[in-house]
Image (tube, rainbow, N blue to C red):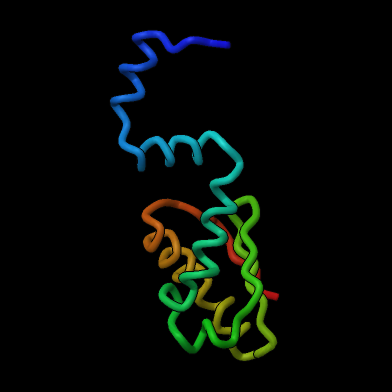
Length: 104
């Protein structure tokens, strides 16, 4: 069993709970899954009611967001506005969470 040294205890006190959680997420493989779940839950806030209504099954992998839709005109609109949507999503999260969008 490893004992906490005075140095480790003082370092622990220098992080807020939020900072510690962010550090944990950064160092683990959970970060993209947490972002994917948030994106699924907050999708309507990010893209608006109409787009959210006709899209489904968002999937985030390797900074690539896959969006599924059965509406051909929406698919075309998403492809044409892909760069703007990438910017909007990254701004929403306050960091670069996606670099590409795939529409299926």
